[in-house]
Length: 150
Image (cartoon, rainbow, N blue to C red; front, side, top):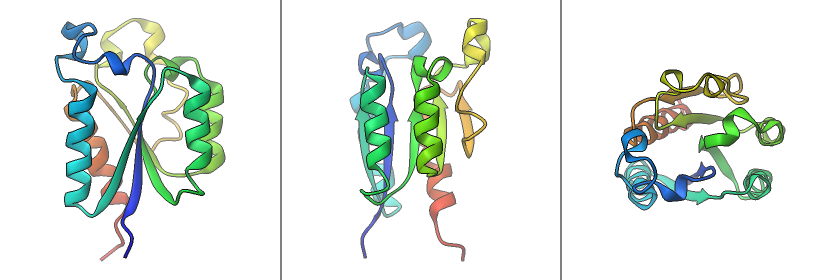
């Protein structure tokens, strides 16, 4: 039996985790987050593939390819695109796959423009302010939603 696939999508500047504003984002690197998620997913019988891009169109192209790649759902940290990208939102709506939105920082303790998300109303859940552990929470929730009812 083939494992269900989940794609983790990281938006702009997240490739700089561990170096970028550690007082906000901590010292954990993106590679460490990806490794943790891959291991966690394998333990639960899922195939986790992680993708990062600083380019909106590249993320949209990935989302569009997901149904043909038999992807079951997404964990997505849209980063700055959270507050600006109607196009990324439309791509997620178009493929209609379940997703959990995650933010490392508590966006509600930051600048007012960060309080608006173009994705939250489409998401199964929104997790913010738990640091890098928020990715684990997001993945756990999505995997639970994708498991067959017992």
